[in-house]
Length: 266
Length: 136
Image 1 (cartoon, rainbow over the protein chains, first blue to last red):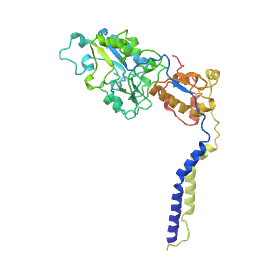
Image 2 (cartoon, rainbow over the protein chains, first blue to last red):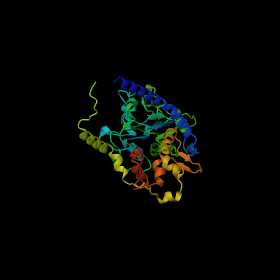
Image 3 (tube, helix red, strand yellow):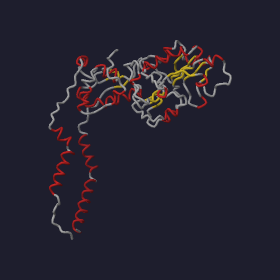
Image 4 (cartoon, each protein chain N blue to C red):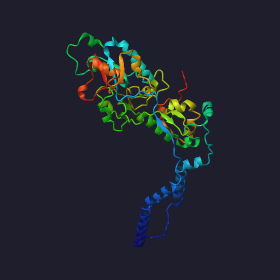
């Protein structure tokens, strides 16, 4: 017995030593395979020359031009139909990119006890504010939601979203919706040019990046008949900056320091 | 010292048990070994036949399309760059639904044939519409 234990330990020792040589073998192996590199791809990635660009996209919404809920319905349905936003029957599973809110709900903290008759009845159209300092981006553990450095749009990378919903908790505007169910059966008419989403991801307004990329303005702006104005907030000559210069505007919950890029003329 | 006579009790039962165990545990190997499954032959649409060459040469497309699509999605979503110019100078819109599947509009006979053969289940089509040509 004494003998066999001794020989067992010897063999085990030699085997362990042999295993330690694996990294060295790997290095030699990879060196020899380097001799035949894959053909270097020569390609270039570019933007569409028609693409609209800005330093920071922003929006001015002229609420004076909206009289009733009906004026908003068209805008909302255009957005939701081209982006394949499902129409969930259960309110708790609702997905919304752009929706209508009462003044006291849209501007929490800025509502007075006695609101003017006009404001009390004006529907406020709300959407993602594409904040300068977006809390959702800070909350996202996978960087699935991120702020595009080139134009300040807060975007979603659906491929990376793990559905943790931290961003929903972080967003003070409720601009984000979670797909509790597979959305496909709830899309009445699918826009074949835009992807749908899957169960378990968060989605929101993207300022129509896919339209900006081909030189079109966002769908809600196009459908609003001039009630929503879109432009570059950093460009002092833009239409949007002129509007901001000439009108009193407010932003949603700006005391929170998120720096919303959507302004409202009330 | 124990009596070292190398005797295995119930030798027959043990050997039969080992043989049965091996047959069952190696089932996937011997089951597929004798089955002659022909390599799939993805069907090209007329449009794809006319175009002759895809974004990359055929050999590379066969082996590297997943890496290509992966880099495309990062480029489009993250960097906002949506056009791809290949080595021949041809420009492509980097879009699975509107680019790739515009030409290869027969997902069942093109994509799925190889994917099923290789038993891979890409979840691309959970979101990306698999036949943008199918106008209602």
